[in-house]
Length: 441
Image (cartoon, rainbow, N blue to C red; front, side, top):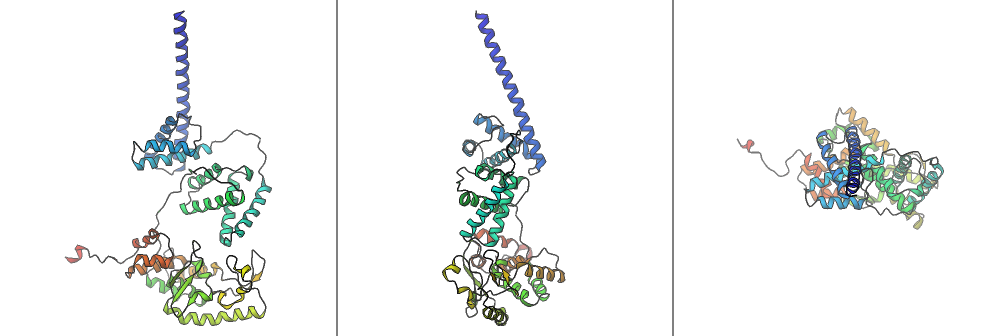
């Protein structure tokens, strides 16, 4: 009898050893596949990969979960919290990144064919229309509308036409991870995609994404802005003429973004106080900046020229210019007033893509971009300069003249001072006034 009991226990132990061995084999196979995945994507240096494998293995052992299981945010948080008691912060952050990558790796594992129906194209077409309506209801700009709808189509392709009403937070998480791992987009592009799809979930699908999205974060790459010298700026202006030259000079002289320049109204120019008002700039905020004294005479002449466009539109009873937000409904005729007329109006009328109204819009951005690019080539400048480079040059040249960094921040309309601080790395003059000891020898 005792021999039989001992024999039974031995069989059980042997079975457990066998199961443990099989489990270890499967675990090693999963980790090897993950290692191959990391090497293939090339997002990590080879010497770091063993650590990523270790953190993933430690996490699943800690939670007593098989490596084929996708963890939720609470489980990851539990492991990382425990890990923080024994390791340094940079190691915890590395483990967090490893788990995000591993979760995306699991999401890419092909599932068996379940005979799912073909992509629900009709529902996605209808969803696009609902998205457009929701954006216009909340007075989003036309450029935001186009961008969000583009991300919606990309998201629909990613989920392979899955019914919109079956979408979950994990679908968005996998989409964001794919952008970082496969597309290698910048953090700003990934955030743009996040904002677009979150808008879809909240305002169109009426779904709240309760779980914390643990998507793979796009790598932050630090790029110093391209800055032109004052001589290079002048040589570019010498190759330009007419309205495009005035626009370029105003962007450089006031530190404007391209779109801010295009959307200026006549009433935004204050010649007496030498100020320029930017309305509903980036972040939907207003600000004031400096109006260059050197441009006052040119602006006065320019205002007299565009007055003929305004008078012609009023004579032909053309609809007033486009107004932001709900102003057009609240004040139906204010778009016909001279003060609201574009500072840089287009020469021809166009059809408003939203209301199908024929009216005069501002100059198309490509008009200035092409003229500026041509001028850069003619000036023989090899730097990768764009219209936005003029804004970078404005900030850098003010910094080199010794102006306070916070003053420059306000003129540029930056929310975060760190954004403005990037120009301290490209300023050629030592703004601290420090002399090298070598210069004293």
